Image 1 (cartoon, helix red, strand yellow):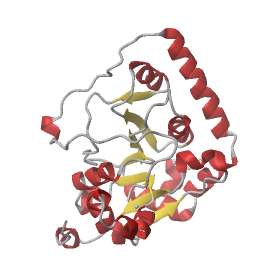
Image 2 (image 1 turned 30 degrees about the horizontal axis):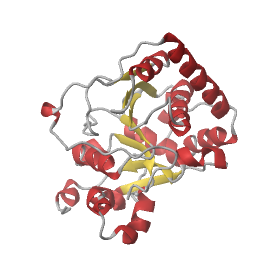
Image 3 (image 1 turned 120 degrees about the vertical axis):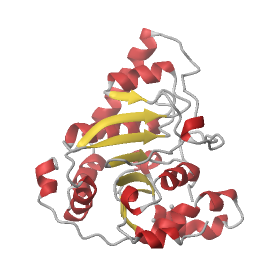
Image 4 (image 1 turned 30 degrees about the vertical axis):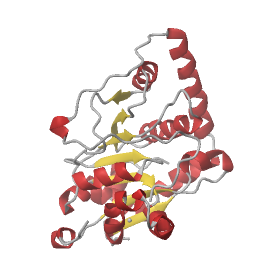
Length: 277
């Protein structure tokens, strides 16, 4: 049963916070993030591969259709839908939506949907959720490795591809879902940096690596660069409500292991201002 805007409106919010270092992703190549620039300095992005091959595009669309059918009929997907419709998550979604009826979805770091099945599984889940839930709005996607073929397939699936590499610096000026499974810690940190304030954090829903797992494993990375890139993740953890997802079967493990829903705040602005990095 879909969670409609009406269902969300019937919930009342009571949220107290609990915030992961990006563990090595499985089934996809790790990508190095470029040096952080301000939004004004960011350059327009175009795929390096501009090939227009209708056969290649058609094959990829077929791959995505097969992948989406697999997920849609899976116990993993049914469990995820059930989780989203629990009172605890509906309350959090209602709080983020406020007076809005929809929230757009921004997908960062999806990887190559042509080369990697985990990327196809992740995109399939995002598209299926949009089709299922009336409160999910338009989907925007970005990964610097996307090809022109992949961009065309994304558009065929109803998504739009960003023309600028935001590097995660998207301010949540309205309620927004950030769909970021298995992204690097730097990208989560950039997102938090761009939204480091009570009003902005209250508009963010994050589907991504478990912040709780980051905290649990921080001692293993004590002397690594990952610790530095996860400072905001660890700092916001006390103000975060996290709901882990269940991958159910090994088939979905590589795409979604250690993934959680995260909701932030509300907290006094002064507490965020006193956090040191």
